[in-house]
Length: 394
Ligand SMILES: *Cc1c(COP(=O)(O)O)cnc(C)c1O
Image (cartoon, rainbow, N blue to C red; front, side, top):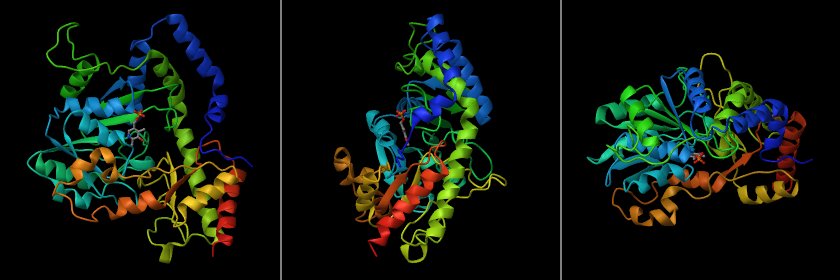
């Protein structure tokens, strides 16, 4: 049985007619840059996330970049980020000649460990970028408290987390000063290329984001500030306007699959349940911390990725690949080990071995297929195959 990590064609086939119509409509309009489809998407996103303002941009990376520009990040400023994320989270900080300051993660959630942020704050610190990794909201209350006390801005990297909710029911991306989203095809809400969105409840930031999106010009050809071309294409917005009403269903599908994985891993004897970070009591397969009830709002996780931890990660990956099961490593190298950040690491703000948890995650995590259209048989096949691997590894 084939189980790809992600099957975009499976999703496309369920709404092909609507999507094809939207593409043709855009072609016939010959309106390609921003325009009514983008405006409509921004309105739809505000309604969906219950926030005041949304600005469609060219990618999730550009969403982060424009957000940092909007809050006025300057060369030499420090921005605190988790040590473990997709590269863009760190890259955008460096591209503004600011300094990304890395903080270790919490192994239970793989998100930034809020309790370790305070120690990294200096006079130069201007902002924190929590990443809602794999689709689970970071510990926002603790971060908000620190930010308030030290006068820092919070830019949420919600690229993997559109529709996820914090424990109080607020949507990821609407809790900090600016929220950033990606519509890269493999995200939970993906377009037909690159796209992104920034959200805010602050009118001043909203006005600035809109101006920065078009080279900083307002009125046209008059530049008080320098922005860039950060525009979202009409064709991507048209696709997203069709897809957005389906997002909750897809997220529920992913959650259902996560629940089934959890049940099957427990039944197989490989795991004792979700949320353990220790092989001694968690079993050979450590499952993501996940609270599956939608009621009561306990961190509504949307599972952009279903990531397990195993000691024999690379061997298991090879084995599963032989079984035609797609997996991925998010991410094999934490920021503090990236060659491009080597110079930063000689800084005395860091101590030896302080990134023990991001190192552990990089060495032991593996993402299994979780997309909404997976069948129960496919999930069972994945768990059975992992069981087969461990049968010969005891
Ligand atoms: C995908 C992703 C981004 C970047 O989004 P793009 O649309 O690919 O530019 C940023 N941060 C995280 C955590 C991501 O997963």
